[in-house]
Image (cartoon, rainbow, N blue to C red; front, side, top):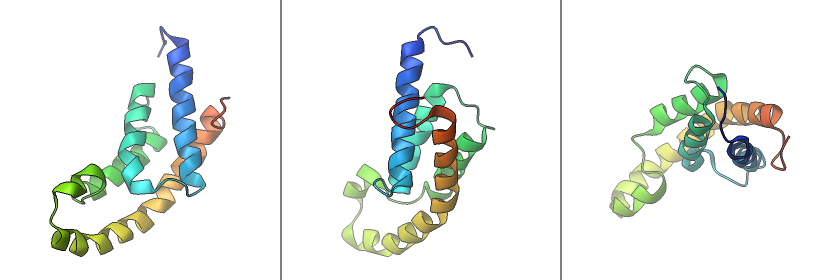
Length: 115
């Protein structure tokens, strides 16, 4: 894909790399950031069959029923309490594929400072 604005592409690459690095370092949780990462990867033009994109799509598909992020404000506290164990299990499950994808992102696009 040819980018009409190479500066925008570099900016997106830096954002993707910075988020991946933060996830690898444990500063950002996996589940709340999987959707953000998927959106950035889509904006970069990664196809659905790309390994990195597919990893985050799989995480989103397996966790889209869980109250993660801002939607938690609309859930009853008792319902959240019941889902919190499932969220913790999903975060543990997603860690492997997400971190592997994050490593590949950093290899492709360089560290957060750019390539």
